[in-house]
Length: 246
Image (cartoon, rainbow, N blue to C red; front, side):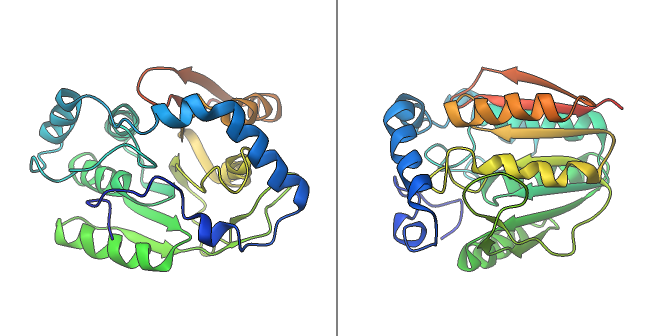
């Protein structure tokens, strides 16, 4: 399976249910699921066909390069944010959390605007392998790495990527994982990478309209005054955009 395939409606519950998590966190997942189901349903829509066509044309990709968006994949608005960020800031290094359709967009945009390096992490080894082969077949360079889930850093709940060989000069951080099924605030642990951001670096958080991500955004704003955060409500899922200012 790659991001050319249709994504399952549920985010691999067979795997996540087997991972060790406190009962309290499991109950919080159920509670947030009851609250944020309208956002989850909206996320099944990948965006307008015209917007996807414009994205593919901008990147000089074939019309069928991204046949299936929506569900747990990035929507066209988030992908456009990625291209805009790369064209404007020309990052030397992009780190992505959660590989997939966005990986192709990042790698293609880097090849067109500055030729930076993509390092992408995902918890599913088979998906890492398939995505790496898919991108290679598209003629773009990338480093797709397996990062199993384990204890999170700091005071964040859920599980987090066990990352290795992290670069110290991240110019763009793209956050589209882990899935909320682990915990509604699970992506908050991405702040453990913020000290590695370069001056003027950007952060893009997908699914920012969901209640859990909104709580994450408020905590980040309090903890990281040197990063200017703004919420873009356009698109199916919303995007939190951060820029290092000091």
